[in-house]
Amino acid sequence: MGEESDFPAVGETVVVKITKVLDYGAFAELLEYDNMRGFIHISQVSSGWIKNIRNFVKEGQMRAAKVQSLDKEKKQIDLNLTKVSAAAQRAKINQFKQLKRERKLIETLARRQRKSFDETWDEVAEPLIKKYGSLVDALKEIALHGEKAAEGVALKWIKPLVEMVEKSITVPTKTVKGVLSVRVLRPDGVEVIKEALTKGFSPANDTEVSISYLGSGKYLLKASSHDFKVAEKAMNSAAENITEFIKSHGGTADFQRED
Image 1 (cartoon, rainbow, N blue to C red):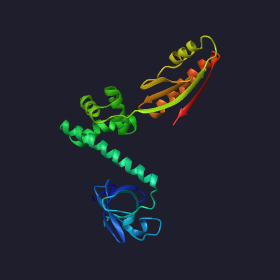
Image 2: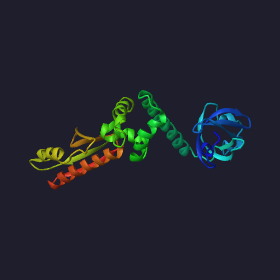
Image 3: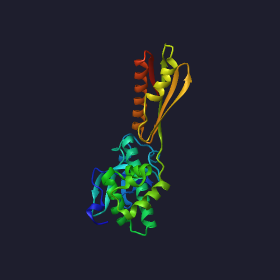
Image 4: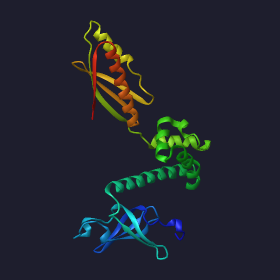
């Protein structure tokens, strides 16, 4: 713990666990720095007036704090909770928890293959992070697309990696929907509508698009994908294509997105 790289930087936001609360402040462990100890003075717990510090921090609580000052020789770290907004705090803690889950998966993979964590991280995690930007995005792609998404990882790791991901990670499906109202006042109007619904769109890859009749010329249009933006794009494209087809055949069409 003596090297400079083992210490956080002044101004850095860190994840801490409150370990002891006193009348004048609280002690906390820095979870990203081998549980190094820091202190939060009562004046840095809240920007408002504090009557009882225990109303603001509790032992065992996980928080995000800003490193206010640092004395490496004394290993003394002063922390500040008031400098981290609620949104930034949620984002930092979620990021920490995600990284912890990722490291756990790599630890599991290393143990199963009887390899060291460092070797497994270098040969599996690093290539995936380089390709996808983050390990969470990489594991999501592997869960969706299997071995072809693990390109760049050494061949000996691919099969056990894919098997572990398939058992450990479930990618949630995002669904968007809207109501399509159509009307075609011509003898073959029903046939025009049927053709519009069957030929007016083609689902994109990794996206499921469905249409169901609600009655009175209204149809429920739904699109599902593991990516919200992909689902939304597929739904809008289908609605536009159907609407254009109906209008080009003398009918009227209107699409309303549902929240």
